[in-house]
Image (cartoon, rainbow, N blue to C red; front, side, top):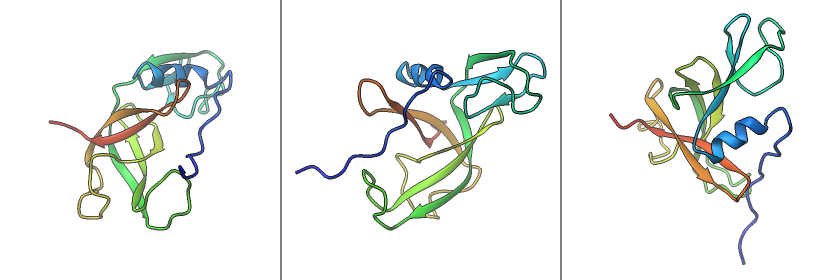
Length: 137
């Protein structure tokens, strides 16, 4: 018998462009057309100047490890401890929470400011999660 599955996000009209992008293996962010502020999470207005003139663009998918905690307790269904709960600072500026893949989940391996690149994990036909792994070169 399979264990409980991971909780999944529920796309809304305001976030659908983001989830459509992850399904296409693209990390999509928003930029304010008035003040040029780049932000995440998705929303219909700029968190910096409140303008509703915003555009969606394909981000580089690159960033660095800003912060993390290693969870050792089996508290979240769908996760096998230990696993890192990370904050990634994207090259475009915003920070997002994610997990780090393809890397030992230890303080020795998870070095702050290490270069990362996005990796997409298709969970089902609607949700593909953006996660990160150490950048190759």
